[in-house]
Image 1: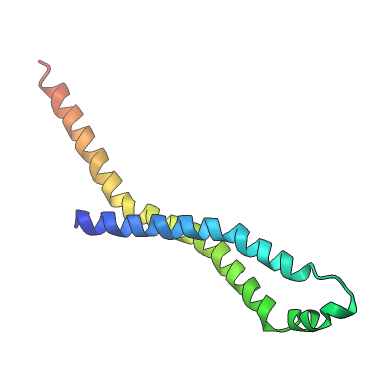
Image 2 (image 1 turned 90 degrees about the vertical axis):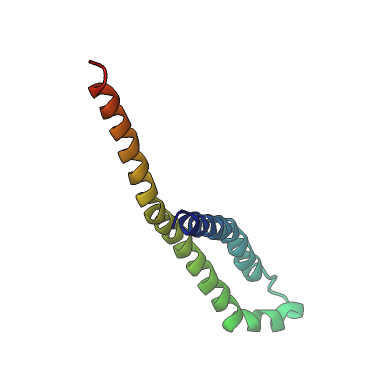
Length: 102
């Protein structure tokens, strides 16, 4: 149970860090796609901008922005039981130590 909790938590940490890292990179790519000069040489590229390419990047950006905090909360819920068990063990040891001080 502990190994699966640790591996699940580790995987969630990696996914969260990856999503947090990719958010500004995807946003930069979206901004770069819209930064096209308005001359005759770039008309085909401007036509593509109105299509699904930019919309797909915007959806990826929105998904990553939602995924990062969601995965972080999921990681916290996975580790909540581990933290609770540690708090119980420490408090039990402290209480036992106080009772044995007589």
